[in-house]
Length: 228
Ligand code: CTP
Ligand code: CA
Image (cartoon, rainbow, N blue to C red; front, side):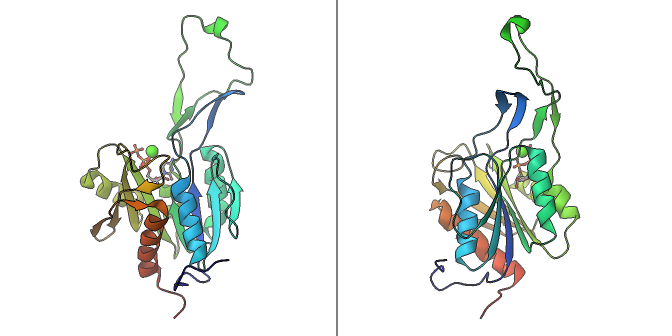
């Protein structure tokens, strides 16, 4: 492992990170997903590793290679992500929930490919809500520090504060995903860090790796450093 220059402030801390989108199948060849590339979550996993943490990364389908020195768990659906995170939650000290979990999934999975001839007049897909993984884990927490992300198309601080409170997290990373240099697919981000006691820290345009380190600085402050 290559240590982050001058920092080993997460030495021995067990960090669980989620990343990427989820995929909810309609039939064997079709699914619903979203634009998450996984880059932000992978950047958090690498940054935590570089600061000495033991990192487990649970990721939906992304085209990114496993970061060396990180235990990677690949999942597909929101329900698989939920199970993978639940199984590992009790044994972590910090959860960073960067995944873009599907909010809805098709009610009925068709084991046979849907044929257009059988739906010539159009096809109505019925969707049901998925479970909110972060809110659920927040109810199971013992000592864990919880970090959530919020992807918004109108960066409203009030809504973000409400989300932080509703989810029961310590820190919320707010992204305005309509900006071309922030959010999905790109290597940079323009985030606002919101703390539980009302602190607001707008970050400048930064590489996702640097956003990850800023976020981890706040995690260290909440968790307490582990090495001198
Ligand atoms: N999240 C989750 N489980 C879900 C949906 C979201 O754990 N089923 C997590 C995300 O990983 C993120 C946080 O909740 O850390 C906020 O996600 P976001 O999509 O911004 O908020 P939602 O609560 O899903 O509300 P909405 O999409 O309507 O804004
Ligand atoms: Ca959502």
